[in-house]
Image 1 (cartoon, chains in turn red, yellow):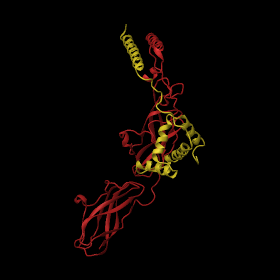
Image 2 (cartoon, each protein chain N blue to C red):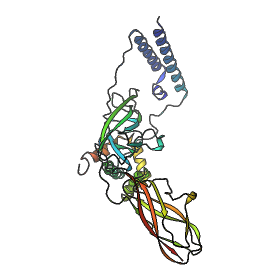
Image 3 (cartoon, rainbow over the protein chains, first blue to last red):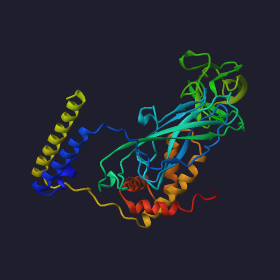
Image 4 (cartoon, rainbow over the protein chains, first blue to last red):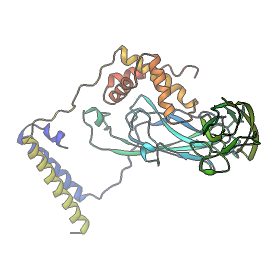
Length: 286
Length: 117
């Protein structure tokens, strides 16, 4: 407001402005207030019709690209997904919506994208639609000049919204549910310390991922963090698809002679259903 | 006079006072500049950054990321391959909003559409 007034040179011009505003307001007293719907002239629209594919049980960050004919600021997008599909937003905005990657302004004639995380349940085996609702503010005047460019407009800020329905393809998972990244543990004779066994998730998330040792060679004792009956990934109960995490196990080798031992593992997790699979790790005592 | 008319008169009086007050304050201040710095001009550097960004925008929707931070890792890898840093990209992106030249340059680069589209 002050910048605009400061551009008026001299008292005479100010007096004219005040008089004109007074006349304008006086005129409005005699007329009934009318509601005029502002047409969205930003042309904001999604360019994406289909996201990256997902597999049942997967959680991943996806993106939808937007463009506009002129600036749209204060950009906010929320995503509506079918029941069972969880939407997570960036924590940087408080977790209740997402905006654009570069900033919260979609500059006219450019592109930017919104990112959000979807968690697809194992029961979701077919492609599904999501609806993105974006709200934004048009600060460009009817003359096409925008506030951000410091060249003035009609000083109106118009709030608008647009929706886009985008398909999320769902494909069957390929490859193993997980791979064991650590095949050998080496400990010193007489030691009693924690060791880590790493696992890498496949495409989908594995809930309730646990690892425990099976039959132990005589002289070896094991324990798990918190004296639990098994060990869980360090970052939580799940082994997230596409990530590597480790479980810790205390190996008490104080009574175990030096040598190499093949020790069985019992690995449990829940994918579409609970599963128990065997594994092994080679324990080398030096 | 109805209550609605009284309310409108009140608003009118308040607006007139506000305008008069602003004018008085503006007179005591130095003239305000419309923009604090000139819009960034387009050049070969901004063109190459815009090309990296356009290619990214063409592929981002068909890519999924395990972690949110992987999105920036992907961008930074593209920038590094072209000899740019994340800060250079950010400076370019921040300048877009008030630089018609940069917008025009990006529009020109993206006009042919995404490769394979």
